[in-house]
Amino acid sequence: MQAAVAQRLLCLAAVALLGGVVALAVIERQGDDAAATPTPEGSAAAGGGWYEGLAGSRGQAGDAERTTCGQILTGNSYGVSHPVLPCGAKLLIRFGDRIVFTEVIDNRLKSAGRQFEFTDRLAREIGLDGIQEIDWRFAASPES
Image (cartoon, rainbow, N blue to C red; front, side):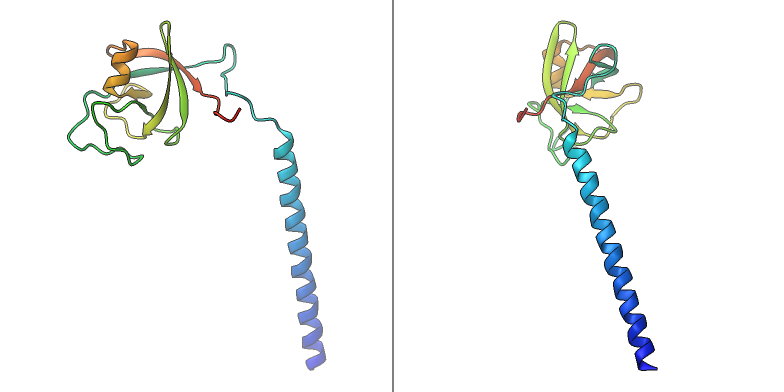
């Protein structure tokens, strides 16, 4: 009886080992595929390299207003709010003949009817008044 139990345990151990080896092989193969794909300098939109979106100013920062990204907003804060893009995502924003480099500092919009909200400082710098169409794309990482 004990020989049968030992044989079953040995079989189960062999199956577990085989499963682990197969899992490692799959993970290694996925890693090779990812390494073979070059990382682009910037993620450009189809047909021209820029995405379009509506943007407006979020207005002046409130007293000790904290963003969902953990930053405390002041009059010198410089960045954008976007409900989907991750905190810290580096962006290029084009409005008219101006292109600025900024980052996502909040994921909560204060008002509806737009995809982006700019800090008051950023909106003033590029001349954004009301809700207007802007162009944007992800910025190239500094390492590239």
